[in-house]
Amino acid sequence: MALGEDYLEYRRNTNSFARFLGLEMTGMQEGYATGTLKIRDEFRNSHGTVHGGCLFTVADTIGGNVAASHGLAMTTLSSDFHYLKPCKDVSTIYIVGREIKNGRTVCLIDVEVSDGADVVFAKGTFTFFNLGKPLISDKAGDSN
Image 1 (tube, rainbow, N blue to C red):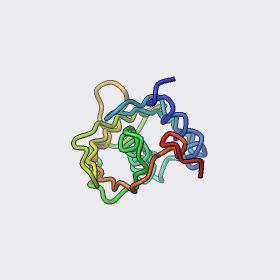
Image 2 (cartoon, rainbow, N blue to C red):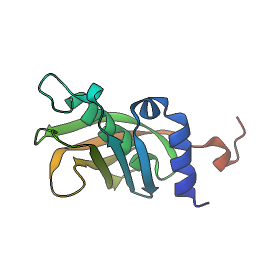
Image 3 (tube, rainbow, N blue to C red):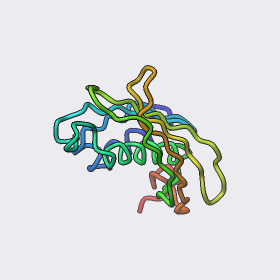
Image 4 (spheres, helix red, strand yellow):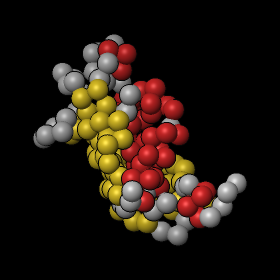
């Protein structure tokens, strides 16, 4: 199994909030990650559109996968998120994250939430901070 697959499996197994939502983390390689979310009625607001907090949550999670794709534990430092179009009449949303810059202490990630075709609902830039430890401790020979 490639390291990217190990990291993806680790993130799937340790992110109980993503599992609770039903966020499928579908891919992860160095500097890139993808996911999908099947929309349930509970995700909609009083206007019938997917709640902005839901869109932000999945973007932050997939952005975190991109940040962690180099094998280091990361945490969200800040974000700039834009809601571009109401997320309505869609059964599944697709989330794609791409690395803009991977620095020594912070990395910058671009994330897009769409219908998987040509409609982009939201787009954000996330900054993640390197916690200075391996994502999976045994990958660095640490058994703690």
